[in-house]
View (cartoon, rainbow over the protein chains, first blue to last red):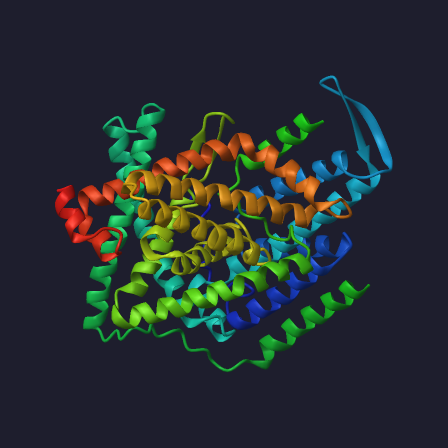
Length: 251
Length: 245
């Protein structure tokens, strides 16, 4: 949970005023280009642009590294796996812990291709994630005809995620103070109790929340954020970016 | 050589959250295929959600909060003694048991969407694949195991244990197939799937048992502390609750 961060709350950054639908559509178009590209350069350009955008809107480098850590580790693992365990053109050979290993040129290239795709795709999604409040992204998803029920459930989940996470931390601390998690068997029991307590809290909170919402007129449908009309000043630059990247994708 | 493959994959598995496929790892054709496979289940899940919430206004908030619980559970590190690392449970087993497999698909989709957008665990391009493995296969495997064993007369605890194990292992097998499809290139698919499945065995076999134990712990806690919730979710009858008390 430690790298659970939503957008950068600075209202003045480059993308703050841009309609969330424009940001989402642009990032989805770029994501589509990255995962469909068969080369290395284009995803790397997307990674640089995405990473650069994150830094330019004020994301701290440490936070950015934290966000990229897991996917990049996977990218490195894929690179090693493909380089050493697939391919037919030997590039380098040696011995590791008594086992003969061979690095294959074609396997390595395939690994670099997948790794660059991961880097590009993660950077594009990270940029839109950091630049847009999550609730605005959900409203944009609803505008894109994502089923309304799904969007509403996501809003409820997002609203209570931090409350339940806090509750989990309190219960966890209380369990540790009472010698929970001491030893493997007790640790398992403590974890089961913690998860069960969260489920009970979820049930009770949902009842309390429904009562409160019904008193305020809830009829089973949550009102979503209303979108203002698209502005030419934000659509044109976005279209320009997509067009430019589309040209690079073709090259 | 096989040992080296196992070591590499184990290193990769250590920080992985449940078994999500990372953003960008699948090429477009495979990513699209998994979206197409996931879509009918998500649509059916949303329809069931809407139907159930017509009769009970608290159902949507409950499903939302269950999604938050699944999200939190799948972020909790669980020590895996055989691998000497920490891994993460899926959490969908308990959701499938409590609200049924179709609504559990919706819960998984929500948890995966939040993880993809704010934590870079999983991804938008791989959302379809992750929904199929964790949401569809995991939920139906857990729910099926629970229902089958309950019908056979087993108690809540053992049935929930089996559901947790089935959820975790089914998710892991499906994810291995999806991962192999994404990274195979020109290699034959089945040998690569086998390699990945075998390489994850030291982590996922014990993790499945741990997830089973935790699911059983959760359900027995609910039966002990709040049997009314299990009656509401039709997991126990009032007569069973009286007998339990």
